[in-house]
Structures are given as structure tokens and as C-alpha cells.
Length: 346
Image 1: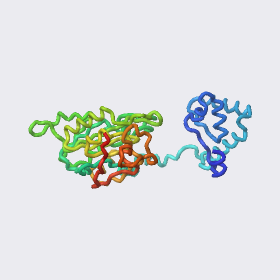
Image 2: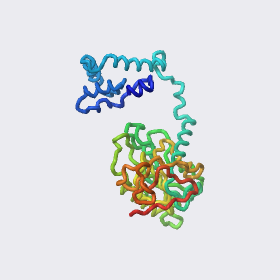
Image 3: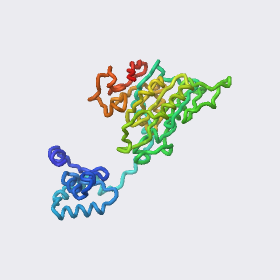
């Protein structure tokens, strides 16, 4: 930070630690952690809780000669320089003139566009997608289909995110429903139970299309780390149940990472990686119904099994072999493109 960033590259800003990050240099020696971090070039420490201990430790380190006063002066100079440059001493409060633009139509359209362009078509057997807006009956299942919290993931309303529809926005189900033409029927049940719907003869209604939205629980940072990222038994059961009640099945996968979907892949004709689309679920409907094409590509190598983790473009094997990823880096079908043969390695 000192020799390269500040000296060689001439960086004139200031360096801020992450949340309590200085404390983690030497977990059992707070004093040594602070001394090492400050001398290494950190100018501002993010102290969320015990700032008194931080100040006392800094004073002791300076008095002991472990942190030179010149280092403290440099840090203060850098911080003040940035504040002066930004005009914070003349205008310390944020300008409110843009406050009314939050969630403006322009902003929402950009968010919706981002959703459309990030969707990745993983599988499209028999060109099931795009769907017709005149599809007579569509069943939609999965908690993630009607839950903005699950669409948004972590670092949203709370650090780890939260389920529910407390945030403003449009769920995937609402987006699908508003896109369909009048005369079409679309029904939602989180658990995939559509037994209440009957055809004209009183028999169980079979949907022309079943859409299943599979969603990870929200998480952020290391809290979401998992050695097993495969589909759960409950997700596989949900897929199987919707398949019984639908002529074809489309899966929309909500996740902050690739998941191991190998066992579930045969249970649906189409699979779409929607990542975390956020509040504008209508962007998913835009592409599913063909108003816009699929253009997204995988930003990761997609694992075939948990045993392949970690897997990336640099350690992916020949894609004709079973130790290759399920989908390679940069993969993504376009409208009308045939699904390549997926190797059966069971």
C-alpha cells in the first residue's frame, strides 16, 4: 500500500480498512494488529463498536514509538485532503436534489434491462422457450416466485438479506401474470399443489407449462459458504410434483453462484439461471415471453458435482469428459439455439 499504491502509483486518496479488518491481522494480539496495519498504510480504520479501545491503543503505540507520528500525520493529511476536495467543509450534508429520483421510472427501467441481459439460458429442449403469452394454463411454483427478498439476496434490507415482500418491487410471478394476454390462466402455489384446479370434465387440470422458481436463502459474505451447493431433496420433490401436473416444465434458478443441478436437469425441458434479479421481476418475464432475446453467458464454470469444487476456467478439463464442468465458462444459449448434448456421467 505504501511502496506501490502511494509512492509508485501516486495515489493521493486515503485507504480504509474493512469492517473490523485490522483486528484480524493477529487475532490474539490487538496491539500488534493495529501497529502492523497502520504502518502498512491503512489511513482510516473502520471501527464499528469499541472506538475507545482503538484510540487508546493508537496513543499507546505512538507513545511507545511503534507508530511514528509522521505516519499519523500522513493519514490525517490524506483524509483532510479528500474532504477538502469534495467540499465537505463548506457543504457537509448530501445534496437532496436527487432524492426524488430514487426508484424513478428511468432507474427502474435500467434495473429491468439489467435483469433481461443477465439471464442465462442453460437448457431449452424442443425450443420450449420463449413461451407464448397466449399459453392457456401456466402453473408457477416455488417460494422464490413470489418473494422479492429471495430475488434480492444479501446486502439488501439487512446484511444477510431477508425473505418477504417488504421491499418495493415486482415479483417474478407478478411479472409473468402482467405479461400474459387476457384469457390465459396463471396460478401460483409455493408448494406446487394445484389439485384444486379442475378441467371442464372435473379432472385435475394439467398446465400447458409449469414454471418452478428455485431460490437459495439470502446470504452475504462467508455466512453463505457451503461445501454442498447441490439441489436439496425438497427442491427435487417440488420439480417432480410440478412435472406430474404440467406438459412441460421451465426452471428459473435464483442464486448468487452456480449450483449443482445435474440430478434435476432431466426433470425440466428448460433451465434459466436468473442469478439475483433484485426488485424488477418483470425483467424475467420480458425474456421468458420473447419480448427480448436471451443474451447472458455464464460468468463461472458450472460444476457437475460438489466433488469438482472449486472449479473455474483455468482448471476445467476437456468438456467431452465427465470431469469437465456441466456448463463451461461463457456458456449460454440464444433463442432458437439447440441444447447441446449433456453428457450422462451417472
